[in-house]
Image (cartoon, rainbow, N blue to C red; front, side):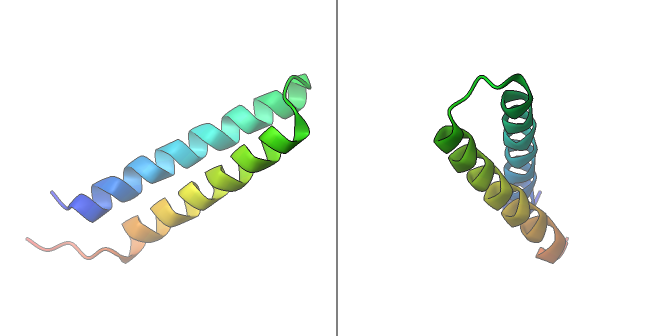
Length: 61
């Protein structure tokens, strides 16, 4: 099992969860604007970093 690929998958899942949560908070108008912006930016960073780790890591057996 490749540690980088596993870490990339975890980051991707965290990014997706953060983006979904941010979207729900925006739709319900329950969160403060600055909090939602920060969480959204961090989620996008997690998602993009996770995807790039999974994509660029070579499988070595």
